[in-house]
Image (cartoon, rainbow, N blue to C red):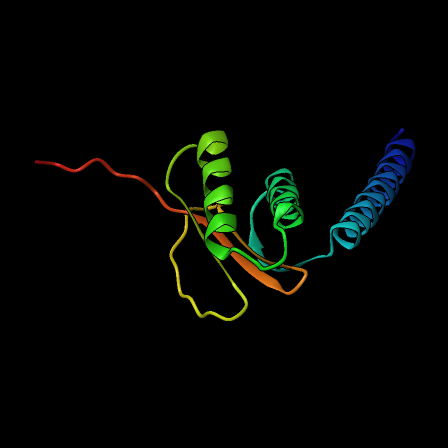
Length: 128
């Protein structure tokens, strides 16, 4: 019986690895379609996908020149309304940063030639 259990476990690991490879390939294809490159991330994939789509939609709706403030505001509002307050967004073609973020709430990516830093901070009530 033990041999059968080991074989079942081996096959299960093999199938899981195939599933993970397929997911990674699909994710890379999506990045390519949206022209996205993740630079650094501590964010679940579904939230990343939402950020990429929101950024892509905003960029596609801008006639001509990049409006960094408009893009940053759109991403901030999208994430504040969907995932609660205290999201921050920095958009530009050249900037430096050093931020503290909540766990699972950090994404730095580029789309076209625009760099976007999206992160969440904890909100603590003020004691008066």
